[in-house]
Length: 237
Ligand SMILES: O=P(O)(O)O[C@H]1O[C@H](CO)[C@@H](O)[C@H]1O
Ligand SMILES: O=c1cc[nH]c(=O)[nH]1
Image (cartoon, rainbow, N blue to C red; front, side):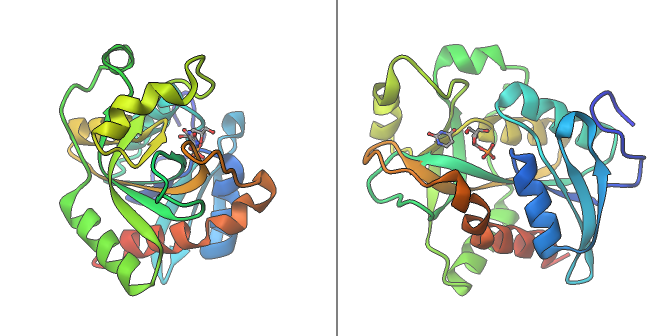
């Protein structure tokens, strides 16, 4: 076990899906995995291992923000030997065309500002998704007819920011499609450990149009992201 995970060594599969929300982790495990087993309850950050189409996969909740995310990612990579991390997160759309409920696949992620990047600047490498995982996700999303976009995402350290949406103007001008709060850290820590990573996000609100989804529809909203992430995680292995 580690300070934040009570599972035994060997309880996690080599590939771990990483939603922020523990309720999403539980829903994904119960909905998609055969014989899911809960292997972590510490602090309510639920973790599960089961089979998808006969192949072992784990799902671990990471909480909100880079500092929480890095605790789980580090312990999975360093102690449990995870080799592939696929974030299954939510995001805010930063363009009118990143519609509610569509998916954003992060081709690259940048910290919201130089300052916020430095706060969690332990892993300085400019890093992105694993090219093979990215290619598989793009091909599979097209094959499954999933409404998706792929491009730059912003990684913010603050959800309720006094500047509101104005703070994303520069990122939007650079072509950013969406904002979440973990993807830049995922790509950096995976590069540091020589692991593979990909971030797939579902748009739950749109910062340009002001539209929002309701939390009550949250789990059903994640069917396509879960199917895509599980296909990427298990095909070609
Ligand atoms: O839904 P998750 O995966 O937690 O992702 C997004 O939602 C949280 C903010 O509401 C942040 O963690 C952000 O990255
Ligand atoms: O980080 C996030 C996630 C969802 N919506 C946002 O606006 N930001």
